[in-house]
Image (cartoon, rainbow, N blue to C red; front, side, top):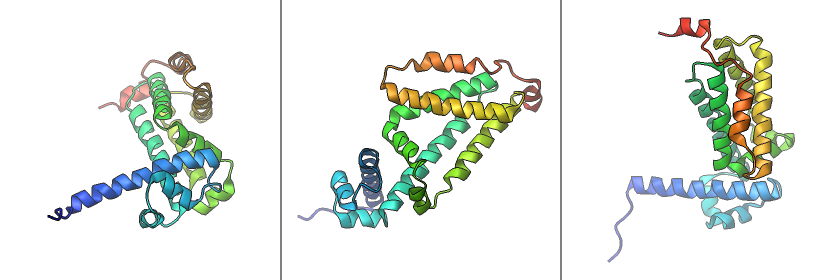
Length: 205
């Protein structure tokens, strides 16, 4: 007896699972061989699907990479939203840096890929992703968060924090598990005040 046809929900779940396999395969191959050094056929083989099925999910190799970068930017946005629940500057910085390290644990190869792409403007141009705008907007959000918590010269402090996030992330990845992340985060966060500012208290309901 022939099997029952799949429901719309089952089909959607299968498509999402296949799409995720392609994205995970892309992270591995792009970080290992580079974007231009990875062929579509190799990507399909790594995902264990036919080339035609890959094209039914993504119209091009660029579309695969764009989806990965969009996912990475969304992760950063969620990290900022979660850290923004902290009332003090020190709490905000601690939450932000801790979340950054947790993201690295979950998506180490994707971080390496993102970093390498920042030095490949020709690839980014083909993706048509507003990466520079995103980085600028992220720094602006850091500035707003620090200013709201009473940090003087919030613009400069936001640049310091941005550099700190990138530096700690790079060191954490390079040391492959031997990096004292918790201790470094505590030391870094001590730069910022641990008390709620008067402005923040006044803004509270």
